[in-house]
Image 1 (cartoon, rainbow, N blue to C red):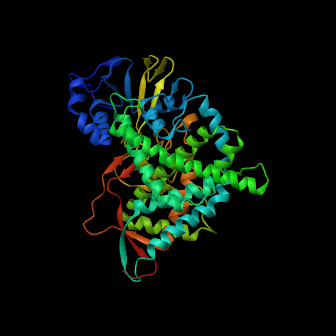
Image 2: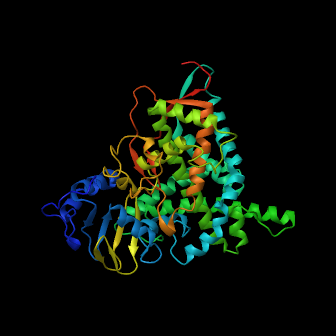
Image 3: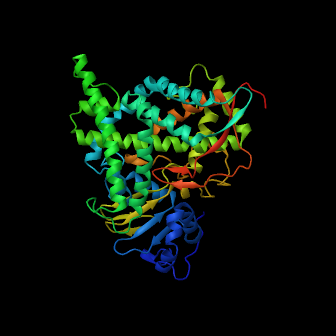
Length: 462
């Protein structure tokens, strides 16, 4: 995916840019829906790093130039906003929480939530995240007889750990009793976000189509969990005769005086997006470690040599190779595969004068595969990151600018802690007849059909 692709005959010419023609887009419609990641890769390969899509009205561009992508993302809230179909679809499921909301609502809510992701808070919840990993791994490994190994869907395991970690860290609540309900509801929510985002003619929620009926049912399930969490916290505070709801996310939201509907939106956003992205990232990372046993062993040795428990505040200078492995996994399998922004005022991007209303689509999936920035881009090479993120590479697994994911440090810290606990308990390897699961897009990029890997208890032979 370089920068030398020439315009093709018959390609779109919006703003003088190359791109697929209307006929090509119509013929590719089903393929785009089935595998949008492959489609975006082909578009960049054929047309270059600034691609125009044939749509009526304001231009719609795929921006695969790192400098242009950084410009668009860094001016979010000023020149570019989130009023796009992608985030409108998410908001129909989660409500206008932090991920989907627009200014000025987003600014107020982010300031309230920021304390739950402060470094002091991350240090305080590290042990809780480690306990979530230990409980899930111990329970699963208990089913593996001594001296044997078992094929485990580590994607399901990662979902359970990530959901438990979200509950403990952000809500100070054990979500285990609600885990099946939440996992089913969030899985349905992720599917609905994709379906709604692809809809050519979005329908009002009151129209009883199969999609809107599923949307209502999913909302009811998520609403019930959020309402229970709020009621339980208020009851706990009433019993303690204090007005302080706590220093976690739920407490900060309640103490802010935010209406219950807005509290619900933020809780649902964090449950859906907060655990989906980490679970996906962990699944792909474990796959890469299983495919590269020498890398896995090096990570295990570095973690074992760490003085004291690994915490969510450990950074690249303390665990350089492990962090490089996580960064390289996020390069190859960024959970957020596409970001979209809409121009709220005219702007100049990569020398192009764009009118207000222009749509910019930025795909970390394609940016992370540019051969000029990443030699042998499809290869897993953690050493790329041992010197830090390469300058100008367009590496943005958590976005960039003012709308940088508020949970970035939480997610990175959680991955370090979970890898420490899991690799201390088990070796991870590939099952017989191994074939990589295909990536499937939802709220995050997940392995289609799960991630079956072999887990063997540490200390056993073989």
